[in-house]
Image (cartoon, rainbow, N blue to C red):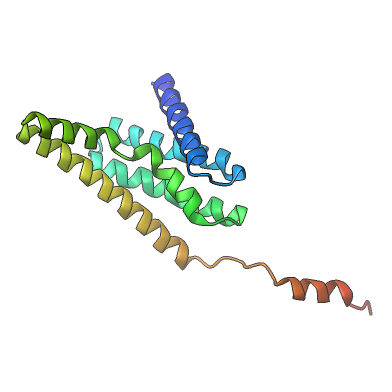
Length: 162
């Protein structure tokens, strides 16, 4: 079980890194985004193995991953889109969509509809998780850096010691 989880994490980590390179994100976000993407997808597989339904596991795994991505973006003072996009990359159901199109082309409509609905449900859960995480993090105030002019004035006029 542990080895399977480690393999899942490593696969998702490298998938995230590959897309970070393809999407030309800043290099300083590659490692944190890879860890976040690996963690979110591994959490999804753990929830599946614990008996959660596929859409619920997808929503919870991607919500936690997106919340961590939002936090990392704030801490690193980077745009959140770079992290959230990469955090969900391992969970995108590309294979499900491919199977749907392949089954449709073969004329196996009943099975194709089943696979297609499952893939689209997962896509909706990913989008919902991203939306909820953005909603939550926008409600939490964060400390903004003081403008450079204020910092310069503080350095020019140090507080007097009385």
